[in-house]
Image (cartoon, rainbow, N blue to C red):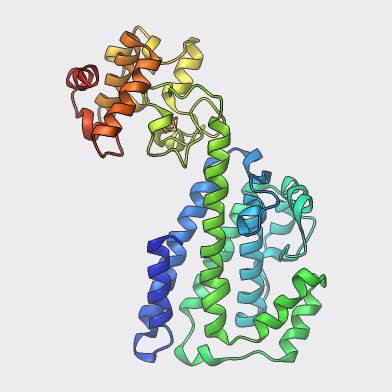
Length: 351
Ligand code: SF4
Ligand code: SF4
């Protein structure tokens, strides 16, 4: 489990039950949820639509055997049902503001009853952008409910009436793989629900989303030229688990994610000019686009690498990168190549 998330979760679990530290515990819970939702946002907003229905671990045991779209649906359906039917006693977010129609989900349940190809088929039907908006709305509405809780609420329990209410909603399938959920939730008090659907359940599934997107990126890069348009090496990139290369639809480099069309300016420019990479461009020395924008602290390093490729070729460049990584411990190339293009090129040529 991610160390930071695990520590925040542990701290939250220690703070919330005690009256004196309850408010701090709620703050910690909200901070943990914010952190996890940032991860969900990165994934939901950066990857191509086809990524959300892929099952790169199909057949495996564990949460990572699902799809990204299913995982987000499942996390927030469970939270929506528990937060609104059980704790707040009001209406679920799914049936508000046209979310169900916008998402185009064929089911209103948590999805526990689905397996294998059913999950993939279900995921293909979803509108991922609408699903993300739904996830945001549920997370925000749960945060408001959590902020309104008092310490005395933690001991609130749920009996058979609640179980029947939940069954009547039809939001939990009667299939064996799903129906246990109602007894599981109703066997907990509010504190128990906080410890699972609102926190740990997120952690487990967001961890699974990480594994899925890491594998999708690795698969996307397979057989693709490992030299990025700007001159970086995808084989040595510290963003390798996030980005599937600017030569694929899984381009999640820093400049792609901040560009309105999701395309790195260097990649877009090279494609428009019909060239293999910035190293093949006669404007390289003076270019200030994308990674070469002077305010980017990696601009000089990127340009030094592109110049090296122009002079010595891609194979020599990949080999020099291997040697640099054997010699130095670094994540970003500018940590070794510095802030001066000529000096960076010299370091590369002498390595
Ligand atoms: S950020 Fe750039 S160098 Fe890194 S994997 Fe993506 S395209 Fe390749
Ligand atoms: S103009 Fe700049 S971004 Fe465009 S191909 Fe040339 S070096 Fe790359």
